[in-house]
Amino acid sequence: MVEVDPLIESLYRWSDISGVLLMGIIGGTMARKRGYDIIGFFFIAMFSSLGGGMVRDVLINRGTVAAMSQPEYLYLAFAGALIARFVYFKGKTWDYLQAHGDAVVSGLWAATGAVKAITYGLPLIPCIMMGVFTATGGSMIRDIVMGREPSVFGDNQPTVIPAVACAIIVLVGHHYDMMAVGMVVGPLVSIFLALLGIWAGWRVPAYQDWAPINDTAAQVKVLAKKAENKSRAVGRRLEPHRVRSWRHRQMEAALQRRIEKEVRSGKRRKEAAAEASEFMESFESDVDQLSVQATEAENTDFGVDLSGDSYEAEEQASHEESQRLLDTILEDDKLTDELIDRLMKRYNSRD
Image (cartoon, rainbow, N blue to C red; front, top):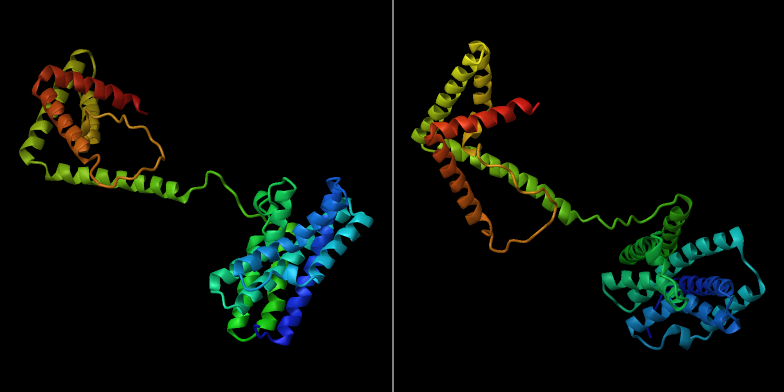
């Protein structure tokens, strides 16, 4: 037999039986709203009142389940069912009773579940789990039996979070040899958090599309693109000076031919030269990329590259091919003039 402080045992007992009676009334009223007979009243009241404690005791696996070894639990559950059978709760009265009753019972039972787990020497996380199972297990079983989605999942009203807070406070009180204080403060905090969800409309957010991994991947992709652009800029600076000078001369020669052509067509030389100079300054830093057009669609999909080199060879080959293509164009004056004409049209129409 596990030795328990009399004060702790008394608090545990009153918390447990108060919750059983109240949940019996709530379960019986829900059976009435569904049109169940007296058998349905008893069963739904029993599941509501005793389901969480039964789950807890089965998981702890230390002796007979309390609801079976101590018959007063069943008496109180059935008493709650009878009260609900002969006393009708509906409208705002029922909404108030159910919401606030669930909040009170969850706080009380989260404490008793944690205390029982601590009494039998369970580790930290299982103690918190026993508090949560005791507080929410009965309502979950009741909802499933009645063919409903468990409210702990469906409406996002905080139920588990207050139970976790209560269990943690009880554990802290036990650590500092103040278990009785923890058993008073824990349920009060839990009840306050649960009622906050009712009074202030606090809900646990549920965003189906929220995925921080995907968001992070998108941000990483942007950073990688910036890094790639910087690396290409470094590569252009490291490119052989002779090749860059030759490309520059070919572009300048093509622009000079364009200036002469526009002057012959009636345009002022000064105006044509100014346009050509602005164009050259704009595209000079990216001259080795003039023939490359972006064909990659933007997306936020996330993939995994285990080897780390899945696209390196392809990108390198594409870059080298674009360089060879540009050099081929620059070697032919006619092709260069045509390239300049197209780029100038795009440059003049971009604003």
